[in-house]
Amino acid sequence: MTLENELTFIDKYLEYTGDLLSNELVESMKTFHHHKEITTHFHSVYVSYTVFKATQRLKLADAREITRAALLHDFYLYEWYTEKHEEYHMTYHPKESVKNIEKTFGKLSDMQRNMILSHMFPMGVERPRCVGAWLLTLADKHCASEDYTHASSKFIPVYDEINRRVSLYD
Image (cartoon, rainbow, N blue to C red; front, side, top):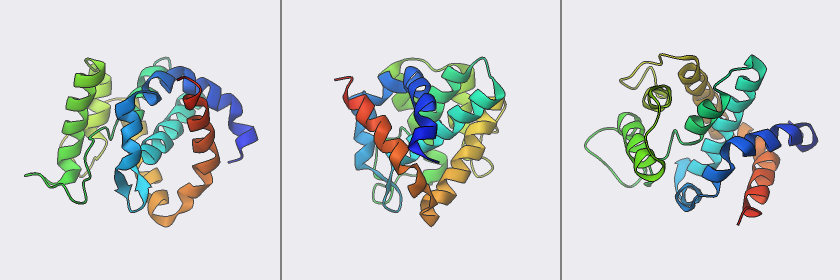
C-alpha cells in the first residue's frame, strides 16, 4: 500500500467520513488503547478504510452509510484494559458504541445498527444480516490480526495523510 496509489481513495473516503473524523469525540479515540499500543482511532480508521475500499470494488450503492458505520464500530470511548463492566468487553462494547453514536450523531439505520452490534461475530450475540455487516466483521478480524502482528504499520502513511487532511477542516 503506497500513499501515491491511495490518494484518490483518500479523497473519496474523506467525502464520506471527514465530518465524523473532525468530531472531538472521534478525535478522542486517539487516547484509548485498543490492541496493545494501537489506538482505537487508528484501528477504526484502518477498518473503515478497508471496508470503504471493498464497497468501491463491489460498487455498493450504500457505500457511504457502510463506511460511516465501520468508522464508528468501536466508538465505546473507554480504556477497556482498565475500565471493567459487568459484561466482557467483546459483548459490551458494541452496545456502548451504538449508545454513544446515537447520543452524539443521531439514530443509526437498521443496517448500521446491525453492522456495529454484530462486528464481534461469532463471539458476540448478534449475527451479521447484511453485506455491510459481513464486510465490517471480516475487515475487523483482518485488521485486528494485523494490529497484533504489527503488519498494520503499512497503513501508517495513509492514516497520517487522512489525519493531515482532517486537520485542514478546522
